Amino acid sequence: LGEEPDQAAPRSPGERIFVQAVGKRPTLVYEGVAVVRTYHEGGVSEARFRLYHSADDRLRREYLDAEGRPKYVFILTKDGLLSWRPHARVVKVRKYPAGRGVDRFREMDLILRNYRVLLEGEEVVAERQAVRLRLHCRYGNRPTTRVWVDTQNLMILREARYDLSGRPTVERTFEEIHFPRKLDEGLFGPPRGIEVIDMRPKVALHQGVSAREGGVDDLLREARRKLKGRLWLPIWVPRGFELTTVRSYACTKVAPYHYTLHLGYSDGLTVLSVFVQRGKVPAPTQGPVVGSNFRRLDRSGMKKFIYNGVEVTDHSRGSRMAFRREEEGVRVTIIGEVDRTDLLDTLVGVEPEPEPSSPPR
Image (cartoon, rainbow, N blue to C red; front, top):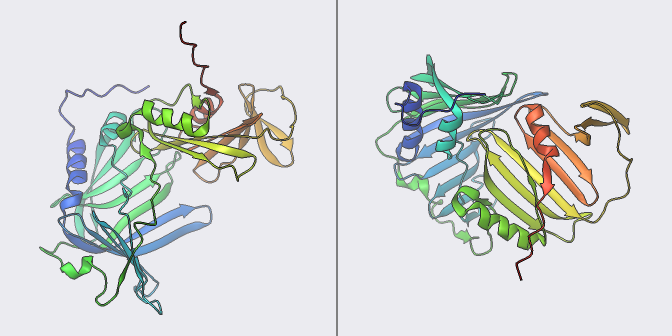
């Protein structure tokens, strides 16, 4: 086990740079071309886009085709999200609710509690000098993240995520970057002469609710009401993880499982998802199989094994591990990028809540 960070101690140089860089993101003015590379078993996939960002945290994102022309345009402001296809035969601009957006460093307190930020030197990114930082987990074997921060204005120019074996899984990097004093205001509005179709009254973005913002007890109480009964919850999760998201769904049209509870746990950078589905009792299956942990079962070619006396199905693909267990009327699935044993211990430890005690007479 790693040591607990001393919250009273001065921050390390790497930690200070990282915190300042994340804090400056909403106020930076820039334009540039970035690429996202996703690494998988079949090779590498790339997507390029052009970005414009204003000092009041407005963002224009243009997804580019092979010739560098924008295929789709998205403009995100506090008021909403605009989107259109600029080369469509009939250009239609639609406005949606703004949503919360994706912020990989939102849970800064969790990141600093669970990860060390280490300085690894300097490199050139997009023709600018940058310091390289490595975020290394204090506890156990978890994916590593690296960020490259501009030495002049603390802009994060590059991010890379690695799996448990150290291989890259996703990389986001600027190929070109410029820092003008001001951007044209026309960049953050719809094309001239095009009517905007307001979709906000018709669309409610389902973002889930942050358990850290809304309160764990209130969210679980609402889930019990919606799912009509006791919840199945993990009795243990890996060190450093906190419950950050609670989602619950009730759909009688999906058989055999009508009720789904999604619990999202995070240590700041790594996410662990637990899905519990309840509903009709599925068809009878083969009885318990006695054997040692991880003993494979040869049944219909499925990857099955026994872990701590529980039959588990392995649905892992690539660096993302996924395991599932089933019993009468309940299916539990866990997905994450943490140590295999930690995932399996969490999976087999998902149990129904105890019956509420009867009020005294």
